[in-house]
Image (tube, rainbow, N blue to C red; front, side, top):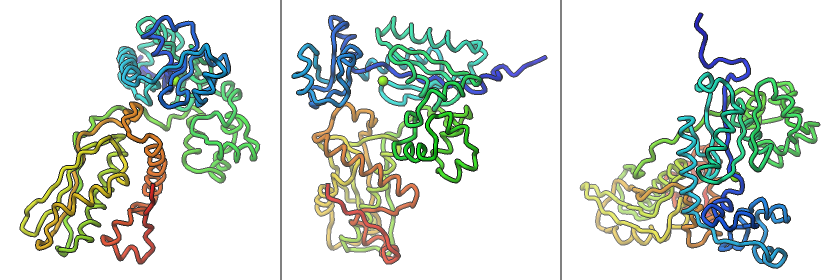
Length: 412
Ligand SMILES: [Mg+2]
C-alpha cells in the first residue's frame, strides 16, 4: 500500500517561525564577548533603546526608553550605537543555516523568518520538537545567538508559538493541541489583531484566541472583515497565508505613457510625468525597494527624447520628497517651441527597503512620517485605484476631477 508521504492527521501543514532574542543586542555580544554577562542596549545614535538584552530587560529597561533616562537610572548598562551592517551580516548567516533545514524560507524581517516544512514532514518524521531543538542548537553553536522557535500548522499559530516562550524558547503546537494553546493567548496578543479590533472583540465577549475560534463563522462574518476572517481560519489551523519566497528583484522600474493630443503646455506635461512617477514609486514600494537615481524624460512629436538624470543624496520610496527637484529638471529639458507626446521615468540603483534599518536617510523622522503617510495612501489606492493622486496631476484627468477626484497635496 502506498501512503501519501507528507500526510499526517496532526500536521496537514507545518510552518516554523523563528525569532531571534533581542537580536541587535545579541549581535553586539557576539562581536564583544566580554559583554556577554552585562546589560546591553543599542540605539545610542537615535537617543532611544532599539534593542534591549535580557539582562537589561530584567533591570526594567524596555525598548523605546530614552537613552538619557537609561544612563541616569542604570549607569551600569552598556549603551551601543547600532551597527546595522553587522546585524545584516549575522542575519544572512542565520538564513544560510536555516536553508540547510528547509528550502522554503521567508525572511520576514532582519531577525524573523518563516519556514514551510509541510513537504518535509515525513523526512523529519514529524518530530518537530527535535527539529526545532536541532535548529536552535546549530544557531547557538555557530553564531552564539539564542532564538525562539514556534512550530504549528499556520503562520499565525507559529508566530504566536515562538512568542509563547521567550527567550530561548521552543513551542510546538500540533493540531490536537491548538485549542489548549489558544486558551492561553489573550486576544490582543494575536498576530494581526490590532488594539481597536481587540477592544471590539473584548466588548463582544471574546477575551482569548480560543473564544474567537469558538465563534460560528456567520458571527465572525457579521462583525469582522477579511483580515480577521483570515486570522480566524489561521488560528483554527487552516492555512491561509503562504510563505512568500524571495523573488528576483528588478534592476530598474520604468513607467512611460503616450498621451493625446500632443502638447506644448508644460503644466500638462508635468501632470503626465507626475502620474508616471507616482506609478513607478508605487511599484517600488510594492517590491519593498528604494531608489537614489531617477531619470525623467519627455518625448517630442519628432520622437526626440529629452532626459535628465537625478542623483538623490539618499535612498527613498516616496516621491513627495523629490517633486520640486523634478520640476527644476523638467524646466531644464523642456523646450517651449516643441510639441510633446509622452513622458516617462526610470528608477535605478534599486536597493532593498530592509536597508531602511541602515539609517541611510538624512532625516529619519521625516522618512518615518512619509512612510506612515504612504502606507495609508497605498492602502486606499489599493481599495479604490488611483483615488489619491498628487495635486500635480490635475491636468491629466480633468474629467475625473469633476466626478470628485481626491487630490493629495500634503506638505510634509
Ligand atoms: Mg526578535
